[in-house]
Image 1 (cartoon, rainbow, N blue to C red):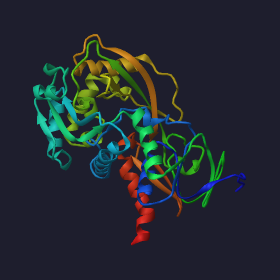
Image 2 (spheres, helix red, strand yellow):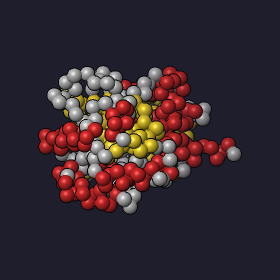
Image 3 (cartoon, rainbow, N blue to C red):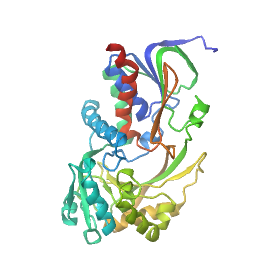
Length: 385
């Protein structure tokens, strides 16, 4: 490997990628007393980690490892957020049922391990948590205590800043990693020595280990997001909100036997929503605005265009659940994340000292802290036993 002449330092762990998955690995390594460097091609957070709801979703994640990781990650978020100066904007989740079939799914979910601490509540009780719900359009709701919501646009930079200031993590921004051959890492700014390298590439499938990533069957998922401004100030929404479409999509609900009837009815009544991968999540920011979404379109390279029709489908579901006449769209954006049909995440091992870690289900904020702890633990904890 040809390296440039400038040495940027020696570290125990180098993390490539400063999204939430990369930061999670940096946190886990720094907490074990390791010297950590995080390298990112962008000057600031710009990818999937800030283009989302900031919804650390536990309720509805697939039963088993994903739900367990989400539960653990929410606990780490709750621990780290106050130390990093990150506000928890909302706590819990309210999943509303518009149809009897959706109510059956919620009732079945409550009987599972995942629903143990959740409560089925009436539409009137749901409106106490979430003002502005259309109570007359709802069958019931499930209230969960497990979930958290942060403002991702500010939380991710704050987390990185705290890692640098409190845990002495080094950040190299506007720096592209060109080659990895541990202990040497060649970058556009010079070379680094590191005992272990964690590659968290997000949606960059080509720069590093392209053949290994391609073997995982990964593609890009693009989504639409909106920020709504209520016509008049509304009381704070205590929790994020999801609805019937979410139950057809989130595997913790969708894999229940009772979901079959709901999915059949959704196919008959909301075909456009299913065609565009639309389901409803609504969260509230500190200024009172609502972040609403989202949709899902897949491809090796997804077109950059954002058809208004997709936003209309999202807003149709929003208006079926919320009664906010006069609301207006204040902001629109497009997000993207890595996706795979047959896995929610993977850890690949090109060598003993390199790991490729990719979340392929849009659940990086929800599961990343637990994944980082597992990967760093596998690399280092056994050495101390």
